[in-house]
Every structure is written in C-alpha cells, then in structure tokens.
Image (cartoon, rainbow, N blue to C red; front, side):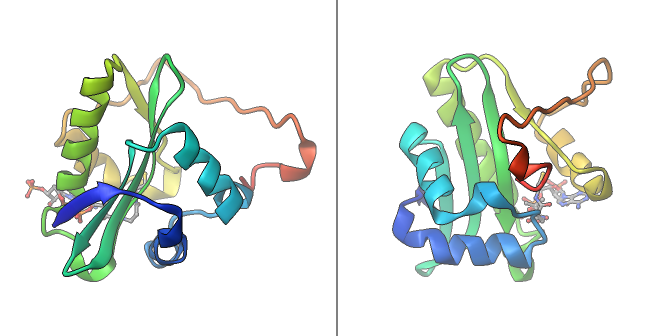
Length: 144
Ligand SMILES: CC(C)(COP(=O)(O)OP(=O)(O)OC[C@H]1O[C@@H](n2cnc3c(N)ncnc32)[C@H](O)[C@@H]1OP(=O)(O)O)[C@@H](O)C(=O)NCCC(=O)NCCS
C-alpha cells in the first residue's frame, strides 16, 4: 500500500469509504468541514492506495498540545491484511516528527471490537477520564 497525504479531490472516495465502514458521519464531515481539517493538518491526514484505489484513510490532527486520530477506516474487503496497522504506524511516525507527546482517539461504545486493534499498537484505555463535549452552536447537537 502506498500512503500519501489526502487532498480534497479525494473527498468523495474517502466519504464513501467512511460510509461503507460504518463510521458515524455528521455535520463535521461535509466537504467544507473536511477541507478545514486538511488546512490545519495537511501532513497528518493520510490515504492508503493500492493500484491507485483508496483503500484506507485516517484523519490525524494536532491542536498544538495534543494529537488526535479521527475516522480511521479500511475498505471492508481489505481488512485484516495489515493495512490499518500500516496507516497507524505512518501516522505515529508523523506525530513523533512533529514532537507531539500525547495523542487521543475516541471509540464509540458499540465499536469496542477495535480496542484490541489499537492496543496491539500500544494504545491504552484511560479509565480515569470521562469524555465531555460542548457545542457552541446548539443546532449541531451530538450529530457532528
Ligand atoms: C479498525 C480497522 C481500521 C482495522 O483495520 P485492518 O486493516 O483490518 O487492521 P489490521 O489488519 O492492520 O490489523 C492489525 C492487528 O489488529 C487486529 N485486529 C484488527 N481488527 C480487529 C478487531 N476488530 N478486533 C480484534 N483485533 C483486530 C488484527 O488481527 C491484527 O492483529 P495481528 O497484528 O496480531 O495480526 C478496520 O477494521 C475498520 O476500518 N473498521 C471500521 C471503521 C472503524 O471502526 N474505525 C475505527 C474508528 S475508532
């Protein structure tokens, strides 16, 4: 698999990949919003291609203090072949290169199967924290 930076002309293919892998999508996943993530983190937003077809994607982000991983997905027909691990290893390297000391990600309760996947790559669960969210614009509720 060849890993490269995401570019906005890949949006439709990547959105479809997120859809078929069951990633929860909402108001933060429009082309306009995804382009904003790209603007902030051009070298952390990655796609993996095989024979020119996008089979994997991960949206890394850095806010100057912490790193984040969003929307990692591998085409269901190509899962369990090491592509997810390869994507994360590349992203880990890129975080390291930027000097990021800690990275967070969020796993939805009903998707606990992937926890094992992340643990194999050194991720650990924080059992001393609860996640809280606040929406400055109430119109988005929790659908973003
Ligand atoms: C999570 C996901 C990206 C993993 O991608 P993948 O290419 O299938 O994973 P890999 O083949 O690289 O697996 C790496 C290791 O994790 C293990 N693994 C992968 N998925 C697993 C699962 N659901 N449960 C337990 N172990 C898993 C593999 O067996 C492999 O183990 P090994 O190194 O001992 O052989 C993929 O299942 C996916 O796209 N899921 C749907 C979207 C999703 O839930 N994304 C995460 C959002 S938080």
